[in-house]
Image (tube, rainbow, N blue to C red; front, side):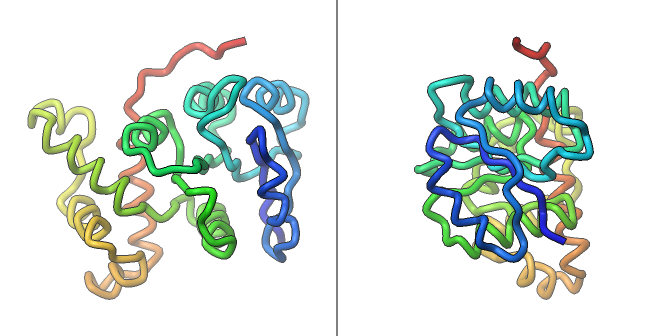
Length: 205
């Protein structure tokens, strides 16, 4: 069964090639955040995409704010952020807003599809070394009481974070730690969840 995917990007035609995948079905396209939220309000839940590819830089409501609002309205949907460049500040703000992963638009099509499929199946997306590095940087700059209160990453999660920074993929981490890839994926999902520390804000109309 194909994964139902939505694309929110003012240049979404660049991603239409995903339609040729045996694993992906594009069921929604929007040119900006407001357009996406308007469309979603009119769709029954059964017709919702399972994964949304969300551009960060859009002339309408930008991607990070859109995710912040959408996660309150549609908590069952997974969001993968898209950008043309790797920006540590943007990517970490996106994760805090509730995004489940971060992709570059020039990533190989196969990598984007693999990420979508993995996210739909396990609820976790691979964490890139830049995200892991930024995460660890924020954690080490946070005082211990605040770190325990806000993030509370376990020793195992910190270990996986450090291995990710070193460039280990999920399969390699699993082999190194003698764990299943499913377990590593769950740990990564927990890390993302614990980073979603942005205070909820009322939906913007």
